[in-house]
Length: 67
Image (cartoon, rainbow, N blue to C red; front, side, top):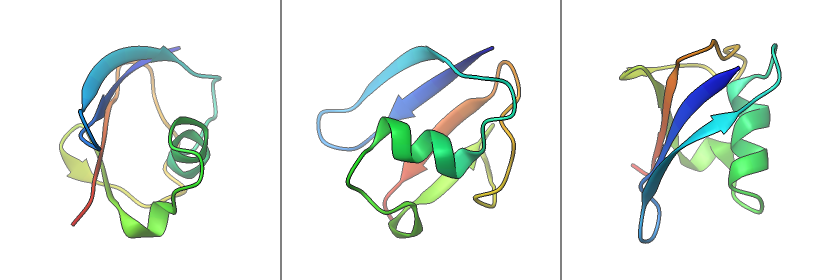
C-alpha cells in the first residue's frame, strides 16, 4: 500500500512511500527516521494525532511534528 510521508525535520520533504499492510505508526517512524525517538514527536495521520499503535491504511498522510 502507498502512503504520503511529509517530513518537516531539517530541510523537509514529501514523498509517497510503499509500506507493508499492518504497519503501525511506530514501526513506520523507526524505519523512516532511524535514531530518533517517536516519543519526541507528535505524529499526525490525516491531520489527526494518533497513538503509536495506529495501523496505517492505504492513502494515509503521515506527518511527524516536533513540538
